[in-house]
Image (cartoon, rainbow, N blue to C red; front, side):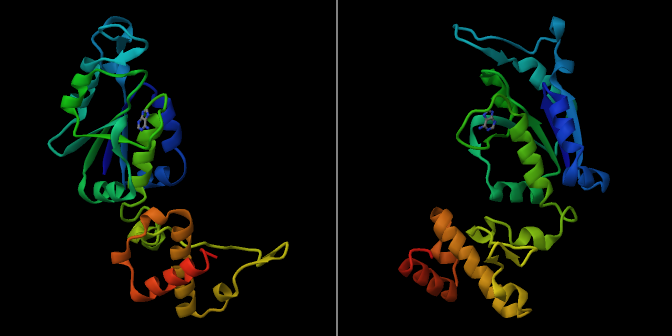
Length: 242
Ligand code: ADE
């Protein structure tokens, strides 16, 4: 999978991708990340990439020409062009999954300042937002796309690590514990150290249901649940999630 990130702040992107799992994924040739500095694609003097909006109004608007030049410098017939924007479709785990599975080359344009010239949208396949709040620029959003897609690519992290992720099967993940077994009287649930795998599986599934019921009840889809899941949900309802 190749990502081409078009940005006014290449250093922000480079510093994130030179650490941790993304760095390892690049070293293992699971992904390639190309960072394109938008200022290298303008024909205006002083590397100008933004200007005042017609009709008046505050703030600088990203110009169409440098953005389209940058897209055209790296686009192939297999590229998908994404624009980061608070007006876009909200990024969710299922979109990350689809992109990890289906795409070969993702071009991400980091929006900036007050916005972008509307004509840029004609060169974009999908406008994507990371949530209902406004950032100063699209760099954080673009890194979120890269990160959430990359960890789903085969061989980047252990498959078991993301098979039970929060949002897989529309449930949040179960609670997890590590050493020490007793911290100031707060003990790790005994079942987890019992070695009894069936009981551990049951405990974890109930943990997923309980977390989802208490923290994100909007995610619970009755149709996806087994009979024993539904029985446990009844218990949760009767005990108010305790
Ligand atoms: N740029 C500004 N706000 C944004 C958001 N919420 N998501 C993606 N890009 C953005």
